[in-house]
Amino acid sequence: LESVIASPEVVHYICKRFDIKMSKKLGQNFLIKRGIVDEIVHAAELTPGEPVLEVGPGIGTLTQGLAQSGADVTAIELDRRLLEVLDTTLASYDNVRIVHGDVLKLDVPTIMNHKPFKVVANLPYYITTPIIMSLLESKLPIERLVVMVQKEVALRMVAKPGTKDYGALSVAVQYYTEPDIVLDVPPKSFLPAPAVTSSVIRCVLRDKPPVDVIDEKLFFRVVKAGFAQRRKTFANTMKTTGLSKDRIEELLAKANIDGQRRGETFTLQEFADVANAWAALIK
Ligand code: SAM
Image (tube, rainbow, N blue to C red; front, side, top):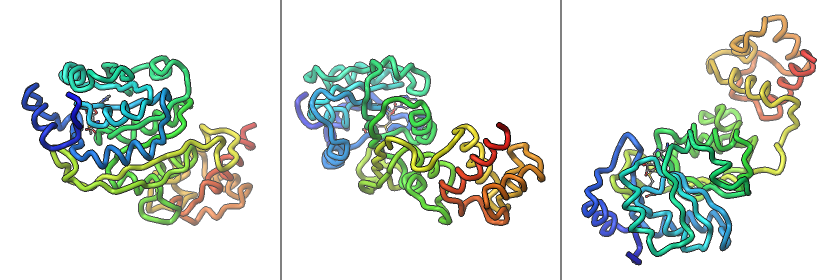
């Protein structure tokens, strides 16, 4: 099969031939537009021989585009039924390796030979955020992520303080990366068509975080607390950390932050200021 996989006819044909029923539970929506595959591959800026990890190759629509770039492709697929399909659809590419398993459970560093790599994927929507967060928090030598997610999630990833989409995901993504939305993708680009519009988002990993943080664990505890109870003031929602009212007042004074504001208006710098005041206090 040398023909382009990402077309309605070929995807239909493959699913029929292998008797594949797309699993909603596994978030299976296969790309049927080669133009979208090309845009994703382009945004990844792959060079021949460069290691790239694909999460969820499905029947190989995007994998084919990655393989054709000459990159060294490793694709992790959970659905065992798809392994023989991928064996057939990707038979002519010797730079593709399929690994069977759950990306959240496998030992990704070992699979990627402890070398720097990029992540490119049309992610299964039911676990988009866990996958992105586990990859970012893993501190793996990832250079960039180019991933298809629900548009609503992409908007949260790039959201700025004080907007309705701004939340803990925005802070984490922007702490580790510089994200930008590459393009929106309508439901009709997939089989089956999902209910919502998707977006391709590119997140380029930073060399170092944009704010100085003494203790990252505390930083993310403050962020989590800051968004825990959206209608409450920051001083109030900080109680979810277990700190006493007095302690909270003490560190807000130290950080020179008005606790009557809401967490969702805080910049990364302000979250860092609170976390650093906390770190200094317990030293
Ligand atoms: N890459 C293909 C494409 O673009 O047409 C398929 C993308 S589809 C949205 C998501 C894929 O992720 C499915 O093939 C699904 O079986 C797989 N998947 C779901 N959960 C997974 C997991 N935990 N680990 C690895 N793959 C998973």
